[in-house]
Length: 213
Image 1 (cartoon, rainbow, N blue to C red):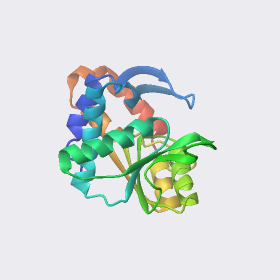
Image 2 (image 1 turned 90 degrees about the vertical axis):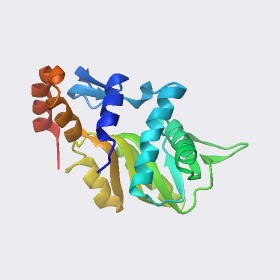
Image 3 (image 1 turned 60 degrees about the horizontal axis):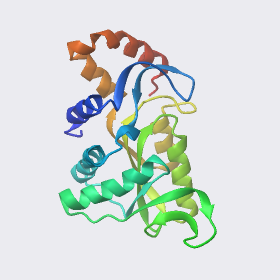
Image 4 (image 1 turned 90 degrees about the horizontal axis):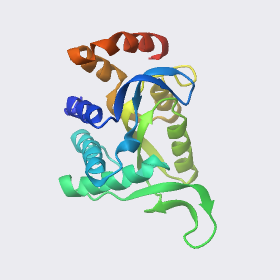
């Protein structure tokens, strides 16, 4: 278990990364909560976010040759996590991210950063349907790289095609799925803090309707 789960939940709530209310998701679902690491849009918040990732990587002793961040949110994630690993843990991790469109002049190709070779640690913000991470793993495999571990800030624990997206990714690609927190962690947190009582029922209804195992 990641020993900074509660700290991370409190950080996300304080910075409105995790919010409660009524939100319409890209999928069209009505959700009682919303999670957006894109709000870590200055040096202080991005550093704090990256520190949680790097602490997890250090605590779990994850093994990899380079860190890969899928465009677009993964671009700042992979670079800031690499920096945090070096500053806080003296771990010098190469990183790379992809372009949405292949560049055919100058610095050509699909990738920017280190050489795509060996085993990648894929970092992203959220796993929901799993499609973005699935695309990333397939892209890496096309470049003759591998992926054994994926680390996200938040696992929504929702269905992919049939099972939970994180389980499908594990089964389809043989990867280990890691998260700083998941939906159960958030639910247990708000249940134990009376100030969030008004959101508990909505969360329970959402979990009963959409959570998959």
